[in-house]
Length: 224
Image (cartoon, rainbow, N blue to C red):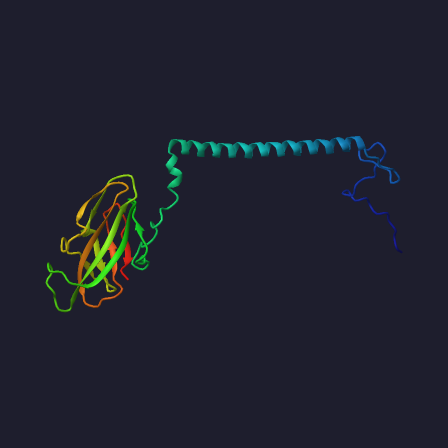
């Protein structure tokens, strides 16, 4: 014979709630919202956002003002410092053999001295220099201009003629009238001088290497 029994209540099942319980509610109960409280919360949120926006704008304004004041202070201390970032025309030309300046271009070194090739005379003949078979004389007329504000030194020994094989020819000092020689150049002054090189006859793609001391990077110019 089968036996019937009543299931025992699960100890973990929530007990029935009565009206006195804290979270008791009726299924047919209607809920009402407090519109005034909702409007107050919305207004408070908008006010907080406005305050945050104003505070952020104030911080940005203060940062920009500090940057402008710092820049103005640096300019007052050294008005010429703002011009340092602008390279002088010709200072970024002829910095290597691979990117040598063309004959019609001028180069400018770190001491603001400009070098230009004015004329190239190949197969030159000079009474002071005996002719040698298989060799030729090249006279290069150059111009130096001091664009800076201090006195600069120049020397014809600063110039070497380089062929495509990396061989260098030094100038013959004092070999011709009007030679560049050596001396000093005042600010704003310029001079012309001639450099004489004895090279292998018929060499092409010759480059003039100008190395004016440890304070300046070498500059390179094609002869033709």
